[in-house]
Image (tube, rainbow, N blue to C red; front, side, top):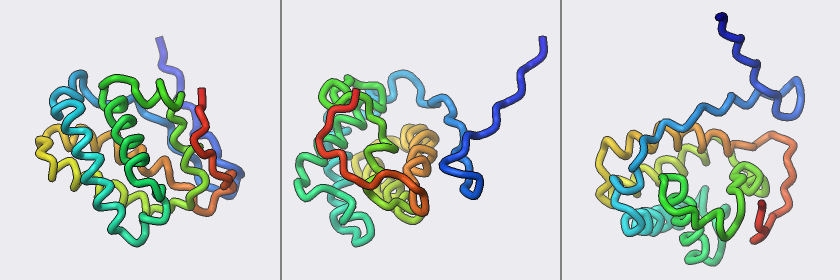
Length: 164
């Protein structure tokens, strides 16, 4: 039996723009949510992360004025993403992160700053280094996937629309 060739990356918007890399399967191991410390630690990580972001002059304008609502959404998403309860999807539908982030012009620098703040929040909240590294293996590509600067994407805010 021969292996079929890997399909080429699909174009973003046109031939003059770089392709979006193919999404790799998640490499997070089962039980990561519990190993991190469950909902209590995820809530602390989201709070610490938001504290960092709200002090960051580059990222702050991309985050909601209602800090607590944004922090709660972040915690619910992280819980689900790490293997916990699907609270985010139950409230908001499919995450569709890239589409939800279209209203914000996100460049490589912003994605890197976001990733650095999340990494620092994980460590500050006592998440073990093995688990931090396991999270970063998937969170790094996810942060890069949000980059949309210089791309022709819809910039209208979605608001609190449920996407199913």
